[in-house]
Image 1: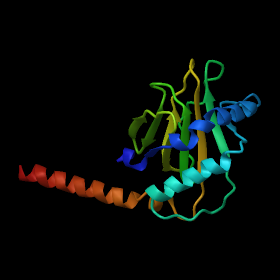
Image 2: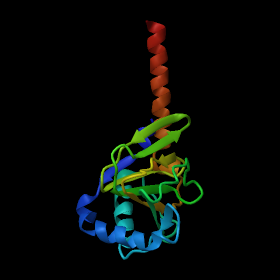
Image 3: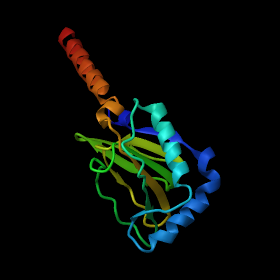
Image 4: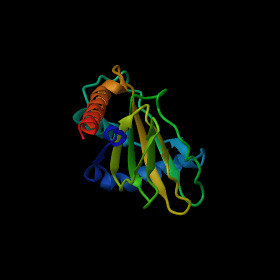
Length: 186
């Protein structure tokens, strides 16, 4: 069920020509901070427009609480590779999006919810969309450059409604009931 809370869209056609500029903008701020830092770029609105567009296409309807958007970068390489801690965005967002600008093989992201774990291997330009409560941790690269951008949307509706969690719980219970019936009848 965990992987049904995670959506992926490749947005290469939208950002291929902007990748170097966005990474350079991130590098301007990186030296002042640690592995996770706010990025100031002229492409922030385009990044958020793309994130919102795909979220609206994939998820239930939602209303934005505000448009005070911040863009965060997780940037690791040989000089800095910390930050692979489990966390969620329950206090700061309803919908979370991560755009992978530079990926490293076998250095994806792990997700966890209620004891169930799921590893996801992103490709360059994958936009991964998931709910605020989903625990996750990036797998850091200590050698090659790994760059991702984090975006957050705060909504009036709950993430459980937006991500149809009630429906997934219903399906899980239906499957468990069907499995029990099959066991009893065999």
